[in-house]
Image (cartoon, rainbow, N blue to C red; front, side, top):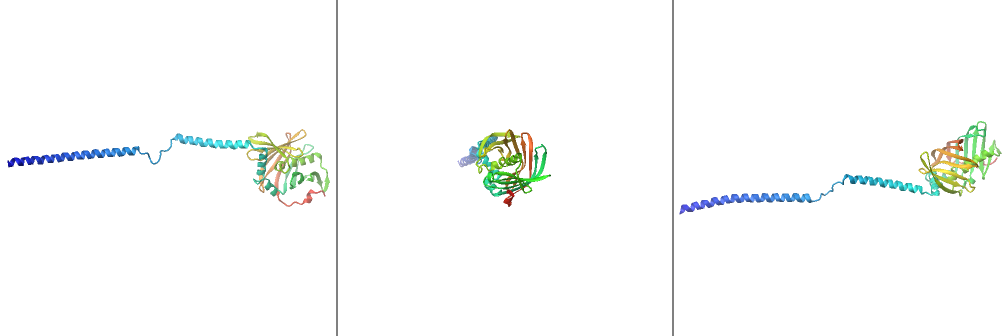
Length: 310
């Protein structure tokens, strides 16, 4: 009886031990399965969450942006070109005055150019068809309008020196302190320098001249406004104004059946105002005059007596 009880107890003890081992293995399996499931779920959640910084846009988007920026730039250029095409005659004239005044306009021109002294060389075609060269001096006392201007133009040829003077809207000559009446062609050429020169445009408003935009032209790759200036005496001058720089590169006028063309070169600034230092005059296709400015000074004191007949 006692022996039988011990055997039973021994069997039960062995059974409990085996059961414990199986239960521990089962718990480990359950824990491992749970841990695997949690890790898989966390990985899935992380995979589904959006990244804090979005991925860069595809290359095609960058290309489209580049094309868009280029198109906007082209549109701006086109608008500027269209605006330039729509300028009025007065806007072209005023832009030219602004540029020649060193972007100070007529106020700067009036202030700086109260007087002018210009020295240089001139070549002219004389009545015999021969070219003569001379040194020259041009003195100017500025007035409110061109018809009240006082101008003296001295020319020194190898055999003679004389002056042409514009004062009180009249032209006369001076030779060795003696007054003379110039030849008609010489007097007309001097008058044309005044009324068909740059000042006819730069002072169109003061002279009560009218301006008209007659179109555009392209010469040697340069685009020009064709601006007609007509004064109170119906003298008309056509100015070729660069649409880019608003400089006058050429002007035209007619006397009878002859068409005259003056071309301007070697622009530079003198005391802050724009000056062409070389010009060439043509009658038809024939060159009849060339002027080269060596020095020009504004604001220098000028004696009024040099414009008077002695």
